[in-house]
Length: 202
Ligand SMILES: [Zn+2]
Image (cartoon, rainbow, N blue to C red):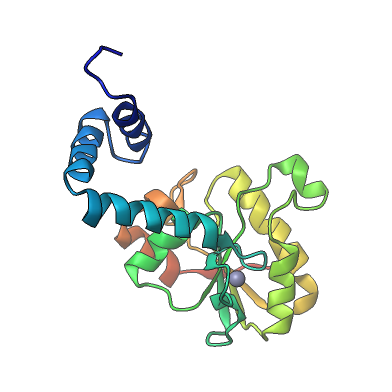
């Protein structure tokens, strides 16, 4: 670090350039903007970040984000279907298209083949089964990716839901193999949803 560099500024640039889509150059511009707007931006951002750090948690039932002081959206019975995704990014993509109206369940990952033999490896699968039972859910849409882990996970879930008699559907195969929901374009995602078909355990 050269003499005319301020450590605090350098640290800020370093952290901000770790955010998606930002390199060092845009990070520097952001930091300058913050410095030049100490009260309106920097102070506000500091407080807002601190609040989010303190209050935003993942719901232990559905895996979605929620405010620590409020009930999660999953406790409402507004919809009778649940779309199961691997991660939050997938949910944001599906939500932004407006294709689907219903509840979500965010697993927090996928299962490798060997893991499906045991307990689901910390994914929120047991709580999915409980949600289906408790909220008289009519359809579970599996929107896990078309990779082998995604398939393994889908079948593990299907198996876990066997006793509930709920209808389980899977996104259509318009999704390319290995394709992750997060990176699909709207058109592909739309037809994958529209042409989803029931799957049954063998
Ligand atoms: Zn929840």
